[in-house]
Image (spheres, rainbow, N blue to C red):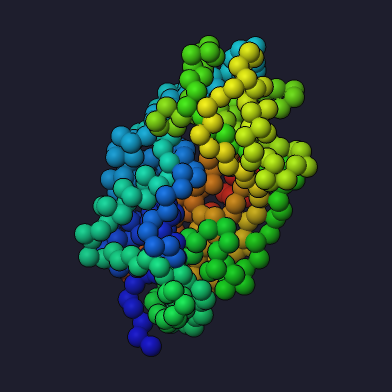
Length: 346
């Protein structure tokens, strides 16, 4: 089987396409395999941190993302009685070109990246291509693709698994996903209600301490707020997603307001897991394939993008002959340590 002189990437989410963009701009040929028929449309993660925006700016993706998003220059902590503290990102303006958070659904980034990549001769993307298995030897990685029931074998020099928390790449490599699932679940309620009109001094990113049930308010583009609640109840998922259940929780957000226009509800299980290894020979794990954590703070997608930039910067140097293969071991040492010592603890 011919070995393609390319890097294969499983998954066309933010992490996979950032990895592709960083490689292609450095002249390293890359092919992305996406199991779906098109880029995902789910909102999912929606927070981009200052250092992530700095990274995206290196390949021209930050400015269009900011234009489509909502700039959040502050993060606030409060109770129902008022503000406890406000952190202003202007305080770190000497350390970043983007002293603010940007609230934008992750599908906006993937479309920006694909638009910038589509004419690059070093970039290819193949949809309806589920990477089902991985084998490797000293010279190459051999992948099995499932295309609507038919299988295909392809080989390349390197593989990046950015295929999510249920990663088939991680499974094929036999890498343990150590950790646990929290007993609490999170319910996210989306509403067009104008909280600023009834809550004094409210900012776009607000954590509310409450002895009965803390909650989190997050404004996203389009005049929509996401309100996140922890659930310790033993209610079924079906009950938790019911309109009546959401109404009961929302009634506790602003005194005197009991009914809201609820656009959507989403229920999350909260996992805390880190892969035992981020590298297995010629294959690597990045993003949710390598680590999952509590969604508060947006550390999952941001951490995954940082994984992608760290790994592909090193991989490009190895592929071009500018660095020895041993340089790739630093990716696991650095990113796994950051995940365990900072992201997981926070």
